[in-house]
Amino acid sequence: MNIAKNMEAIFVATVVVIGATSFATAAVPVARTAPVAAIKAEATTMPTVTVTAKRLTAAEKAAL
Image (cartoon, rainbow, N blue to C red; front, side):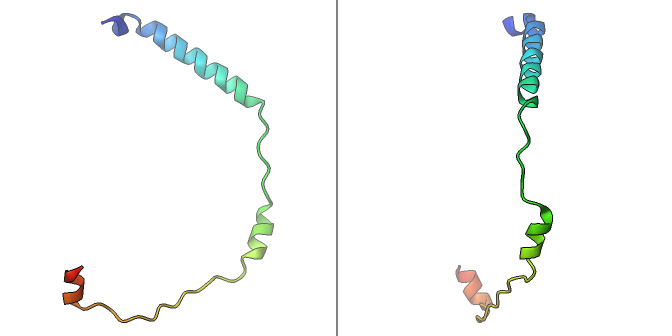
């Protein structure tokens, strides 16, 4: 019952905390990443995997 009586105070405290964290993180600079063009230039060929194995029969699948 105490939570229901103090819901307004809980809401105001939550808004204050959220507002303070938004102002605190606004001054943090954005991390710089490598340009996208440099990443695309390195990935010109796509690796290919070839699997050579026999398929399981229905009985072998059921045994698993």
